[in-house]
Amino acid sequence: MIDRHNYHLFQPLLYRVATAVLSSADIAEPIRVVLRHQQNATVLLDEVTGIAARQVKTRFGAAQSYDYLVLATRSQYTYFGHSEWPRLAPGLKSVDDATLIRRGLLLAFEGAETVADPTIPTPADVCPGRRWTDRG
View 1 (cartoon, one colour):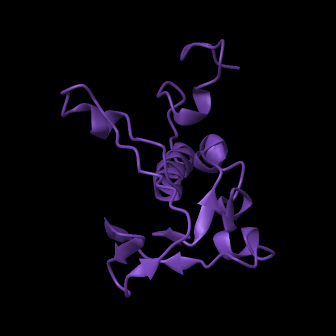
View 2 (cartoon, rainbow, N blue to C red):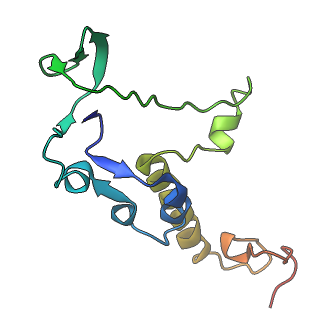
View 3 (cartoon, rainbow, N blue to C red):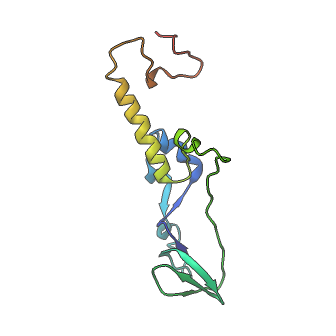
């Protein structure tokens, strides 16, 4: 197995990492651990750059031969031609994305702790079913 990451990510729980409910280690398992009992599997941290007759070319190492080839391509965000949207709506497909969102969220809550004026809405005021003016 050749992957550019050394872990298998369970993407459905990325939102829990982004909201500081889980650690990234809770949803990312090292690939070598996952395949440790698979005697006929080799794990390489690399990136495939080409495919030839029963061999794959990699970015950093020598060409690797294979018995079976399964390709898993990556996905890419689309904002439908709106170049301003990525700044307002960050993607959530990787541990790095979740960590970045988590950092922004936690910094917003930390900043809310220092707001002395109760009329200024803070992230702590956001709650389902409540309006900014519903305090108490």
